[in-house]
Image (cartoon, rainbow, N blue to C red; front, top):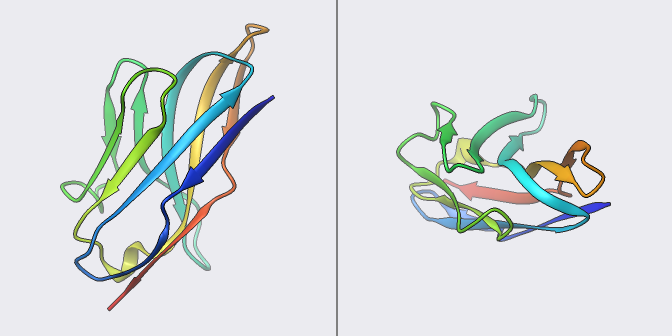
Length: 120
C-alpha cells in the first residue's frame, strides 16, 4: 500500500503565495510521475501540473507562469509553488502519483486533498 500525504493549503489573499507538498510512502519501487489536480465546487477535477521521473513538467494553461511543480528526486516530496494566486484558484487540491510497486505492478494513488482558498 502507498500513502500520499499533502500539506500546505490554507487561506490567502489574492496576489499571495502558497506552497503545497506531497510526500509518498509505502511499497514503492519507483515513482513514474506525480501531479496536482484540483476540484472546485460544482466543477470537474482538473489537472493543474504534472512532473515525470525525468523532470519533464506540464501545466494547465490557467496556471502557466504562476505555478511551479518540482521534486528533488524520485522519492522526495513533490511541491507546488503557487504565486500570484487568484480567487478562481480556490479549490481542493489533490496530489496524484503513478507508482511502480515492489510487486512490479503500476498503480495510481490519490492524496486526501487540501483546501486552498483565495480571497478577493
